[in-house]
Image (cartoon, rainbow, N blue to C red; front, top):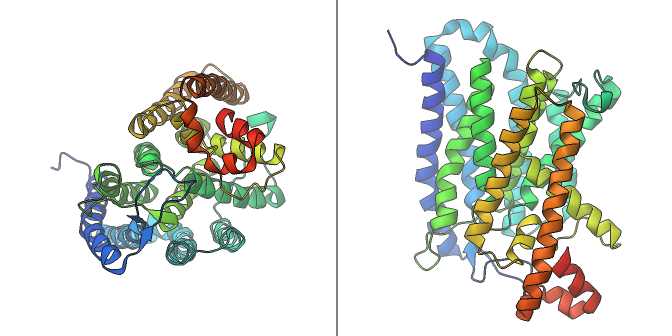
Length: 394
């Protein structure tokens, strides 16, 4: 008799297979990137100062697809009954998912190689998000958030499309320092994979763990890789769009069951795992609109940029943000049984706001003690004093 339950063994198999494929493909991507000089060049908005290969995300979608399908195929071979039950029921969802994932993979790869305007990327994101919704995976309930329970189709479907696009872009936009986006995704995927495995949703748990297996090797290359030795790598838009899209698919799926017993708790935990990038994008977009700036054009006002302007080193910024994410996951999980979900969200936003008020204070204090901090906002220096103050404080 097996000590490990059979489904868990296959989840482990999918994770390890994905991990191995990532370990094999990443060194080859580095070799091609250096031979063809496919680098992410530094500019005033970026943190890195030397050219770094940015095609790490190319390994994500193929590795995830192969490990998923091979694992499911072997699983069905040893368990023929699955062909008529769980696998058959989710097959149509995964067909649409991987169709949308392929679209994002292609547009991300083109963007990493030659550049693509944000309008074209946004259109492809809307199309890919619509494919998930057309598969039947869309929010039909908010579980009582803001007093809303059941959602009609004509609201739930477009709302789900917007949420998918929002989460996809949130992961893409927070990819600003080594290990941040990939580290946050590792935490979210581990939480979601474990939660779905406990619920017996093994196919969806496999997707989470297969994606986690791809990201872990990349994270080590991204954080500990040395540019001089040719071992450092960025994921680029190909990788961040892939991770954001998969996370949004899983979170929407968890949300479809939030009206059931225990489902709302799982949905709260799932949202908590990506709460930092979600709130950060909202804050940045509102700030840009308040300053009459294009909300789609990049700047240096994200959470990690602000922490860097307090004098923190990049590695400590990474650990700080990971700590904030873990805090929100644990806090919301512990407090959920005692606090209404709407009030819990309000508390999260208040805590987030208070944290940024303190960070703004630390930025002003550090800028007075170190006037040279203004060099981290060269675009503001060119535009004038008002923009410099905005960059330092916001």
